[in-house]
Length: 115
Image (cartoon, rainbow, N blue to C red):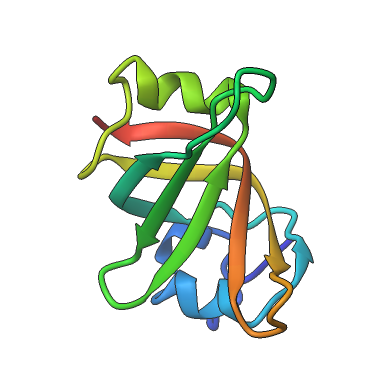
């Protein structure tokens, strides 16, 4: 379980969660940041691969690149989630891209806090 600076386990009270996410790599358990979808774009895919969305998430200070799998991408395609929505990331992991610097948040599950 993750704790904030005061030892509380209410992770929504942690200031600047994107900065914390950028300092981590791998699966993060017990940490459920609430972030705004600043940008959402459907990735160009061929007819074999399922639809995916690339998103940019913000905590109001910093941003992180995100990627949603096919099941979650349906919420973007159906208009349930759009730019400006606030998401609580319930399951995610942070990965480093091939350039060795850029980090991406691979979203496994989320809840829509504000549509």
